[in-house]
Every structure is written in structure tokens, then in C-alpha cells.
Image (cartoon, rainbow, N blue to C red):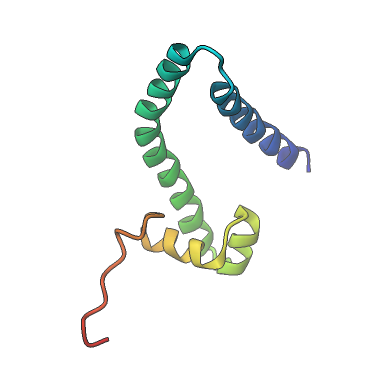
Length: 101
């Protein structure tokens, strides 16, 4: 339980920092901070998605159900299935259905 609280606290610290950027009163300083965040975010998202994919893959190899993984990660069952298949959140990586389907 202490670890779960620590995870929530850490996530909240990140969200609070993002809120602080949005609340900055100096528009130029705010724009510089936003530029730095956006520049870093694309690469960071790839790394974070890879870490989450590894967790899902490891749990599935242990025969943990999609529903249990979804509950543990706080996401939907479909999201867990998409993660396992390597689909991104945008849907652009999903294979397209053939016209006759």
C-alpha cells in the first residue's frame, strides 16, 4: 500500500509541475518552459510506452488476465490489448480493415 501511495504522490508531483507551468504569469518564460516540455515529451513518451509495454508483456507471459492487468494499471481492457499488440494511442498503428470487411 505504501508503494501505491508513493506512485500516486510521484504522479501528482508531475501533474502539479505541469499546472505550475500553465499558471506562469510571464508569457515568455511560460512559452520557453512549454517549448522545453514539448521537445522532451516525444522521446519521453516512447520510453514510457516501452516500459509499460514490457510490464504488460511480462504479465501476459505469466498468464495474468487482461482484466487484472487493466485494473492494476488503471486503464481499460481494450487499452491493455492494444498495448500488447504494440498499437499507439492514436490508432494510426492499427491495421486497416479490408474494404470487404
